[in-house]
Length: 501
Image (tube, rainbow, N blue to C red; front, side, top):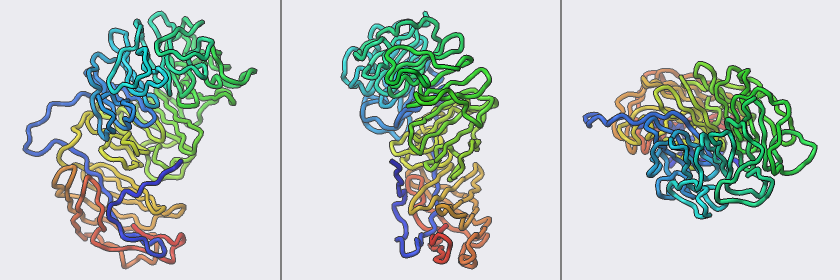
């Protein structure tokens, strides 16, 4: 179900004709405070995993940080409190990989054991109980693991001898042992002895063989069209996949990246099909959930990021308000090394070890300190940068009253605001320069000088700001919620009956 959040605490009443106050929206992101002792450099991110409503990053010091929803303890910080910025997983050290599932997270350790935390109603933590945990617990009896993957209500690991074990919910055959009996501890998946990687979905698992083929099991098999309908309780070979180099379970649709550098995805009703528009792919992630907000993103050779969604209304493709269904390049991301897609949002590790996220943010899964949907990438606070501090400039986009408004601010303080009225063109395209930013992330003000005004609605000519005008913007928790210079801009005769900028 799509939800639109009105992010403004103060906005003009909506009179007849959808008249809205012109409101500049700015996000202030923390940087080191002036005059304060320089904080010790934070560890950098090396890998990312996006779950249902939370995400986790593996850091360069072999620890893990997570952020977002935490109702089952899936952030691992010892609480069940939602976190809007990254927090350290308690007591976890020596981690070599991390995997975020629906409401559960797991990490592989250097000693080839694994720790999991979060929801455990089906035994998906593997500790022999069904008690949910807000801090990591050891997967019982697991040793010699070289990879781990957390799904919806189950998890799996690849062992050093290239076999696979799984644990948790088995009602749809996700444990792959020929039964529907769930297990709170690892059980072997028979018939597999050449596996190099495994990917879990909400009720299925797919494993990559050393020869480039893939086998899947569980809910509807998720192995492409098969003669026998229904759940596959044992591994079944996916037809026509012969040169895969990586595999992901995705929530409902498994995918691989082939040796040709292209992604292929499938489900139980359609065969593996090339995802068009993606080439030279290094890493690929898809969150195809059968809803209008499904999307796919890839890291391309060279470090750029490309995304695609047939209905990108929640910002999950990262290029601002758009209606395009084409594959697009996410602007402003350089040297990307890892990508993860969750439910309506995306995160990537970029140059310098920072993490950038964009899209839906109702549970804080973007980690930027807010719960506001972001149409362009924003920094995860607490990774590479402090979780709070003096004001700096970043990117914001918001949606309300049927309008989509976005504000992009460069590091030099130059900003461009776009206003999209539903299906219609921009009404005003306004540029200005910000300076004299004072205060902290919680409360600040900035000076704004208009540098360009383009008017797309003729009825507004003469009633818009002029180049050179200056105003002071008051900000609360990074967002301006008052009209710039107090003016309203509207056009009752405009095509949509809407107005504003």
